[in-house]
Image (cartoon, rainbow, N blue to C red; front, side, top):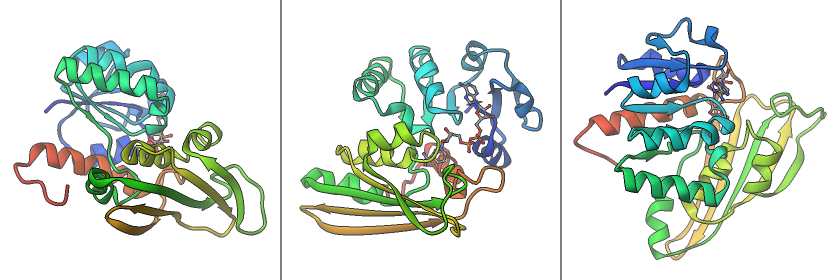
Length: 244
Ligand SMILES: NC(=O)c1ccc[n+]([C@@H]2O[C@H](COP(=O)([O-])OP(=O)(O)OC[C@H]3O[C@@H](n4cnc5c(N)ncnc54)[C@H](O)[C@@H]3O)[C@@H](O)[C@H]2O)c1
């Protein structure tokens, strides 16, 4: 598999550390690609032409700007900036296009867990889904002295307010089919990015808590989120899928 990556930040660097098949890179700031293997492309078209699978690890606006082009070119795509899929019409358009073109769109579990439960539970019906995220106040750009509730609303509202820090709320909405209720807490003493997920449905209830260590190069991004696309690539390569 020939992998191309858009966005040469924390996630791209982690992927490149583990994979030898990264062949192409593109970043609006091309210097960011300097220490990653693979050709630094002049533009998105060059990256698409060199890749079988394009990993978006850049920004929600990059998803809006490039996804259609990638899928139209018949290439598979893995999306990290799930916030770029918040608009249902746009998302459904991409999913339909992928079906028509016979390509795949992979959306990793990123910084959260429990998507396996959600997928199974949805078959019988999910009643509610909520997420409470707690992050260090600095990474949220908030000045506070103690743990403070700074946002309560839907995932759609959350990603509009914190486009770099609430991708998982949109991921949860896509996975559950519910515009999930979100609470965001800013904590000046938080050393971890914590996500608490509460699910209720015909299956029963589930509470999933993930206390994520931030990645070293970008504290807004959890280390787990950088590992999640690697596991998707492992699954693509593997004949045996466990726990999916
Ligand atoms: N799904 C999840 O659970 C999850 C978790 C963490 C981060 N993310 C998202 O994944 C993305 C990458 O995260 P990261 O920590 O590697 O970010 P980062 O800030 O470390 O790196 C992003 C890179 O993308 C480049 N970039 C931005 N917009 C671009 C564009 N339109 N075209 C080309 N390059 C562009 C930037 O110059 C930067 O080098 C972010 O959008 C982040 O919010 C998702």
